[in-house]
Image (cartoon, rainbow, N blue to C red):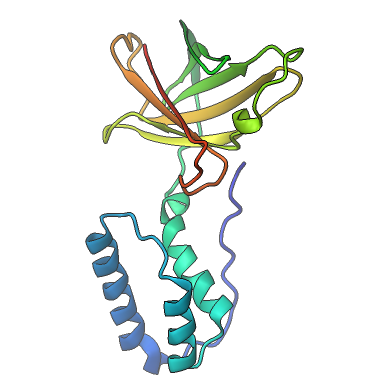
Length: 198
């Protein structure tokens, strides 16, 4: 799914707020560094107390603190351009009767695209825990990975990931670390984690 660009409205800005707004940015940076990029959420009773103390609605403060957990989704996105070739992979791992497969990698001049296929025997009844809507791919600090969503039916689902910079044409030895959750914030008790080495 592509994020819609922010559309700036022509609204009034009180210049007296500039110094405070800059302090807010400095505090956000300090909070991010202290949290080690894992901000969490203050407890309900803490939010409720702050709402009363500072004259805010609880839901507003919940939305503010929840937004701290979404910064990575606003990172500038590389859109694959200049298709070069397909790299055959044909690697798979089975976890709880689900087969996770990487068949190939699409190489572009500025990125690589990896499809994670998930297959199971649709005639057999399996746990509903396979329905992980939120998948993440990690490959270390060298690569930026983002999901582009997925689709499927009847025993098959496929999820697409864009990786930048592009992988080398011989990606042998590179490890793909997949994490699947039922929520976008890696808190589901039914989390699935596995690796596929290229």
